[in-house]
Each structure stands twice: as C-alpha cells, then as structure tokens.
Length: 112
Length: 117
Image 1 (cartoon, rainbow over the protein chains, first blue to last red):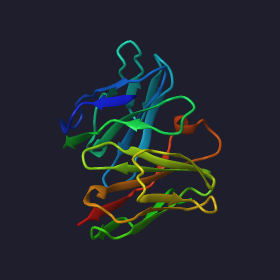
Image 2 (spheres, each protein chain N blue to C red):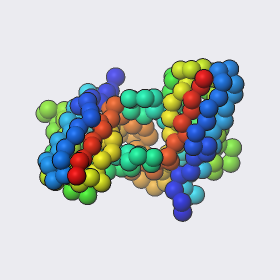
Image 3 (tube, rainbow over the protein chains, first blue to last red):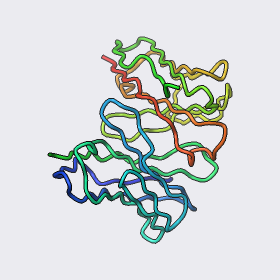
Image 4 (spheres, one colour):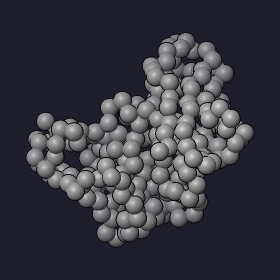
C-alpha cells in the first residue's frame, strides 16, 4: 500500500540556519503531496501542497518540490526562526479520496 | 468562526471503561474526519462523514469504536471497554463542501488525548 517515509528527528538548528527535512513516498499513480505543521498544543495546519509532478509548493518561506523521478517531497527553508520549532508531517492523498497517509513526523528545534 | 473544537482536551480513564469524545467542526463544513495519532507516529485515518452519512471506516476502527454525526453538525467518537492500546491523541478535522477532498486541506482540531490506565 501507499506509504510516506520521513527523516527521524529531532532536527536541531541554530536560528538563521538552512533547513531540509527529507520525505519520500511509495504510491501508485499520481498522488498529491502535502506538508503539515503542528505547533505545541495546537492542531495540525496545512503548510504547503503540490498536486502534480514538478510543482513547487511554498508558504511562509518554506518550499517543497514534487519530484516524481525520486518520489520525494523534501521541505526546505533558507533561514529558520525560533518560531519554526514544531513537528512537521509529510503526507500524501490519492486523487478522489478524502484521506491522508501521513509520515511519522519530524520534530524541529530551533535555538536562538 | 472558532475553528474545529474538540472536547475534552484530555481524558484519563481506567481500562474497561467507556469514553466519548466530541468534535464540533467549522459550521459550514460538511465533511468531518477522525484520525488517531499514537506517540511517535503520524495520524492514521479512522473514519469520515459527509453530512450525517459515515462514508468510510478504516479497519483500525474495531467493533469497540463507534462514531456518529446525527444531524450533520457535531460528531462523537465512542470507545467501549477501553484498552491500554487505545491510549492516543484523537484528532478531528473538517473540510467544506467545495474543494476536492483531501486536496483542499483539512482544518484540524487540537485533539483529545486519551490515557487508559
């Protein structure tokens, strides 16, 4: 079945460092890909998405490109802030369905 | 609009007891979803409703679990005869009638954390 694999955390960075969180997927066909973020004590929030190959999703300085050839959707940010500390989840959804398959999440800690 | 509301935020129960959680979606959203998130794992799909109709249930939803959305507004998730393995965060989410399912992006509640002792 479909699955999503994320790099294990925690990822600890200094403020203004470059961030990469790796995400790869296994799926039939052409799923849509997503990054959700969960701040402490809050629900998951959609960060960005891409619905077809070579699409780039972006939001709040974060970016991810849908790479069909490597089945990847890595999350990047050029300069992280302390306020970016959270758990990041990669997910996929097959067209016409209403549910996600999530990865296990990667905790990011940004130190001042 | 205050987003998706879940109550209670925390629930501690003894093994074998029944528990019920409530989810109030965003008022104009007609689709409602339940997920379960165990420690160190991502959320796993349990079930979803379109209005009052329960359209899909995961095999994770054993006979001890039942979900309802009687008037197409709030939803309840009941777990009977709780087991320690039921300890998890139970997440509710909703989406509007427009959009294309999960592609639209869910609005999640903050969850109900269940601890079975």
